[in-house]
Length: 86
Image 1: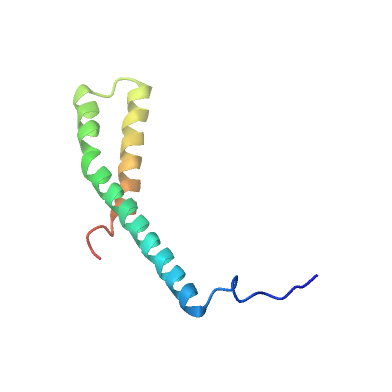
Image 2: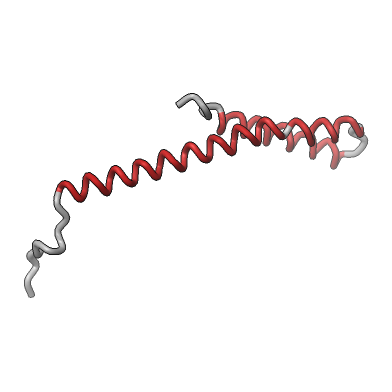
């Protein structure tokens, strides 16, 4: 059994460099997309929050909903805080 690597299956340093560059580009694209979604979610979440608040908080479920919307808004702000600053 021969354990040597054939020249056909081994990647050259240039191929590795190209592969790493593609991975970095994909990662950057993914991060930018997640930041954009976070930003626009943070921008839009106050609308349903204000609608719920305008109706009043009379039940524990409504209080939980407002709390959830505020928490989601804070998370979205955290995720999207770097959007547009690249």
